[in-house]
Image (tube, rainbow, N blue to C red):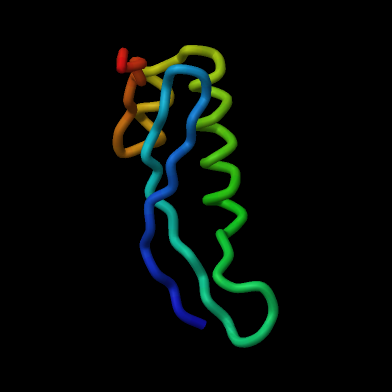
Length: 72
């Protein structure tokens, strides 16, 4: 079983967060996959962004962004 660090982007409305996770690769089955803790962390970040709680999201994620549309 191998583990590899990765980043996942979670977007909710005009906010996005970059979350550090570990991808686990194992022989056979559906790989790579997230640990249950990382899956819950992604859910917690999504809930914080949905509620507009940037402080909580920034404690769980490595970076939090506010997205703004660009006029073309």
